[in-house]
Image (tube, rainbow, N blue to C red; front, side, top):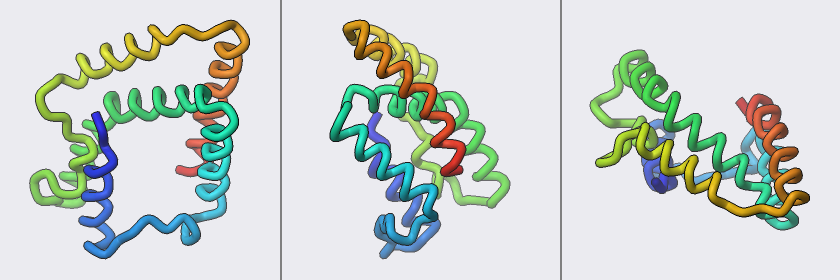
Length: 131
């Protein structure tokens, strides 16, 4: 399910072949969000789980709508700029089910579970700020 290379390919399509990630040129809200996620990854890595989960559920649920809207709205050539949302082989429903089952199978003690759930409430707020 790795999307990093596909996302880079899409960004190069829109921003040019020499595009490179540059956090310094991003808006303050994006830099703060990235800094916070980096802090979570250092201090409480298990608390990255809600970010990963919500991100994947959004990509698997709404990604096809985004792909369709972008392709038609921007008259994109077939598959260009939207490869992030293409899944080969397995259905999105199957991927969602498998991913959800994997996350639900992770055993957490009560305190860690509370931390993960608390972090989950922060995901949407932080994502909203960035968007």
